[in-house]
Image (cartoon, rainbow, N blue to C red; front, side, top):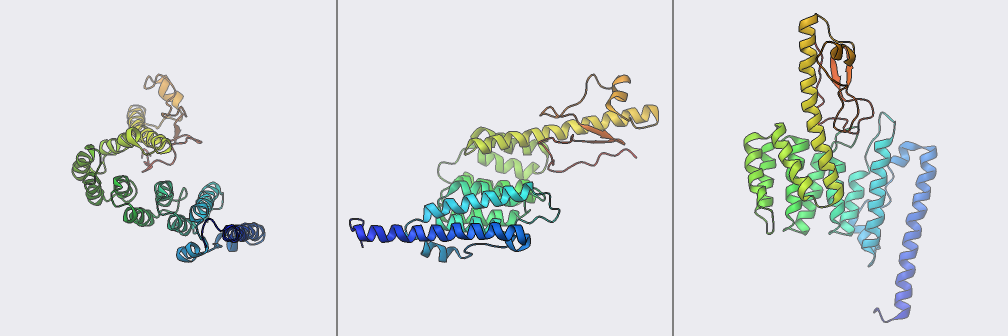
Length: 302
């Protein structure tokens, strides 16, 4: 069967239409299950074997990869927004595995999928280990893709807090063809100072400057704002402590600190949302898009 054979082309098209129809049918079935039995729907995955799906996909692997990627994003986004206290992200890695098996060069799925996997609950499944597995899978397909090695370093640094592994991966990324010169410096800084805010700033500043796309650069800016917020919370905590030492009680509101001359204006985070002060505890205000902070500080005056 060749591309010039109209019968062959028709049969191939008919097969993929049938396959797509089966997937749509399963999606509708999932919708019905979701209404009746949420637990069953949450554990439903259309085809769990990447190898089986590749055989079924014929030459339409990329089309089906797009479908599974959309499904992965929907699953992640819907679960993240859910108010269910027991929400699970069980389908996320299998969907990402299928996506990247159908299209092994689906770079966006590796980058964003690994970030989805690494995010701590309730904003994600808290599986940096699977994020690394996914990125290593991409690196096997594209062994010179220094960005994958760099992002493995970020996962080790930001979510696993394994600074030795992070430094090793930054160095490995820096050794790959076309990698920026600053990766070697980043590896040395991480090994010497990993975990402090200044080294974290260095990482995110480089992502903001050189990120693979606008979404990653925007996320880097948000991370930098989180670090700024943590510094501001530390400063406000010191002010609260000074007020208590002077007056023998914690301030009841920011107004108390303003009247006492400790503040000139209402303190707000880098996005403009006022900080919350309650019983001596300083925290991000409700609705701040910087929440949760990487390490939410417990600021309570005893």
